[in-house]
Image 1 (cartoon, rainbow, N blue to C red):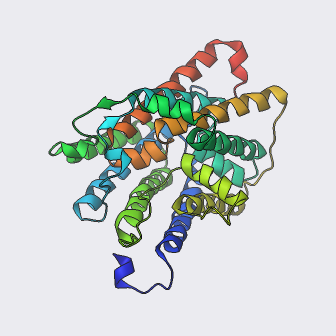
Image 2 (image 1 turned 30 degrees about the horizontal axis):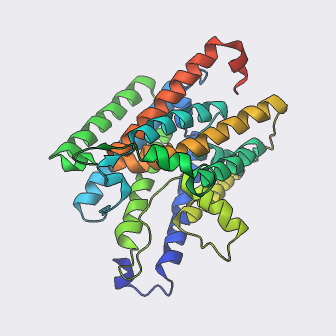
Amino acid sequence: MLLEQYDWGLDARTLQILFALGLGVLLGAAAQITRFCLRRAVAPDAADRGQAGAVWVTALAVAITGFVIASAAGYVDLQGHRYLDGAVPVVAIVLGGLAFGVGMILTRGCASRLTVLAATGNLRAAVVLVVFAVVAHSTLKGVLAPVRTTLGGLTAELPFGTLYAIPYAPYLAAAVALLAAAALVLRFRPSASQVALGASIGLIPVLGWATTSVLLMDEFDPLEVQSAAFTLPWSDTLFWAIASSAIPAGFGTGLIGGVLLGSFLSATVRGELKLESFEDAPQMLRYFAGASLMGFGGVLAGGCTIGAGLSGSAGLSVAALLALASITIGAAAFSRLGTRQPVAAVAG
């Protein structure tokens, strides 16, 4: 759309990267200020679990509502995207989601939260992200790919892949999500700024879908339709950094760069830059195990707490909603198991 109306002097790929960079800066800053992470909403050791949950659900409600509005206005078109496929790899999604949930408890943060922390000086998070990206890439294209393809072949044939196939379901889902968010906000009373920043985070997946599917889509040389995510983008970013002459950057790489930049700038302004590292070898091994589970699970589940949890669920994808539920259940169950076993109490 915008490519036809204006002469930008740049190709669609470059424009998408720049736009993703801008979205990433906003996401990084907002996530750094709010400490946005699904783990904080489900882990019993989080003192502000209720407030964190209220902010997270607010982001989800805004993402769903924003997608409904953008879709009705013709600014989002996911036709042909895997999230709309009625053949849902249930086994892979459930196992992957559970693994990702356990992993983010072990590392004390999901992939998005670790990206934010890495930019503020947390060396644990930086190392974990490298392991996460390597395992994710090996699951996509390396030695773990046969496991992915085998589990991915176990599908359930559904009459539809998204709730948009059901009349009025998107409007009902948006209403329910907004009411749930309002109820949580009223009960746990996060600050107005936290709620506003959570809402802004919820808009970013919608803007990402709109950018890649309509606004900056080149019909003659179409690029992949995608939005905010961290599993595949971190895999792509790592290997782009290693072999940029052979592997071009894309929307995901721009988003990762933006999140790192936005988080760093926000932490700098707020005086929250701080170098941190592993305390001992057992802690490092625990974080490595968590990173591996997140990398492997994120690929199997088709996304992380942002990729499937916000971006995919915004479009009411059955696969994404199942992934989000599996991640939440895995994290909640493992974190509660850890509180009952002394050996797991060091998972932080």
